[in-house]
Image 1 (cartoon, one colour):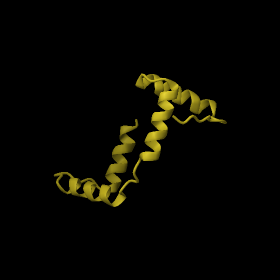
Image 2 (cartoon, one colour; image 1 turned 60 degrees about the vertical axis):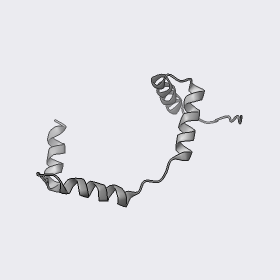
Image 3 (spheres, rainbow, N blue to C red; image 1 turned 135 degrees about the vertical axis):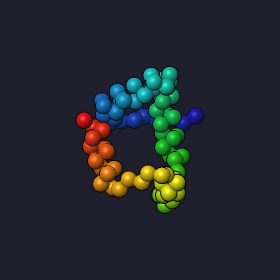
Amino acid sequence: MITITIKGLSREAHLALKKRAATHGRSLNTEAIAVLESSVRSQPVDVEGVLRRARAARSTMKFVATDSEISRFKREGRR
């Protein structure tokens, strides 16, 4: 088992990690390990693949909104 010490962690990051640990029912240490392991094991996003799947899904829809309509829908939804 490897042990590390984290120096200089901001209070905000510490509190956020503590909150996340409580949400997941983990200790602060176990949550820190989970976050670190998840971070170093994550795979880069295949942007082209995501766009390809989004375009394919969009092409099956009966209603297609323009970019300006989508922007308007977003603005209206924030009221």
